[in-house]
Image 1 (cartoon, rainbow, N blue to C red):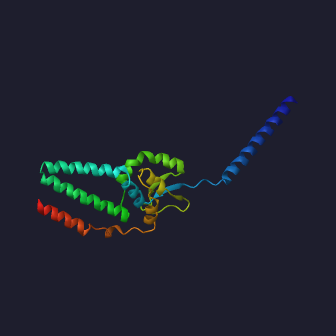
Image 2: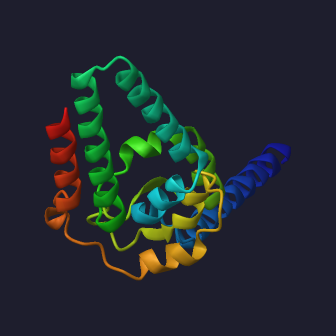
Image 3: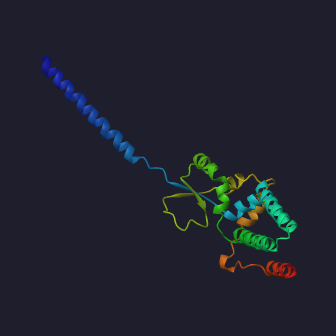
Length: 193
């Protein structure tokens, strides 16, 4: 009798465990899996934040020091090289702020801060909105422009200008040619050397 009672008890426990596992897996299957979140930013606003930080100032100081050294050494080739770099850099900035040029080299400055931003905002990816050509409709796209811009620690409030930038569609990048004034200035400077 004891053996029969133990067998019945074991069978009841097994059936109970089986039912419990079926109910809990059914309940888990009904839970909707959370959507994958993609964080995006408007690179035009982010580069504007960079331009209002100490980072631009540091860049200009280094450039000025290089130019001063070339001027003191009367190194015409280096002076011309630096002039071309200055024009090219200005043109790059115009492509970024007025169009949708890549800021990947600028993002290198804050890349160590991106994992924490992703963690706090719950996103799996952070990418320029201009580089996100497609995402599955089940993915959630989260605008992180303000948070990414803040990583550059702008020295002034950029909210008004950020809103103005966001309100304008970017110009097609193929229309972003080097400005005539920049070219004329370089040609005049080169002719004097």
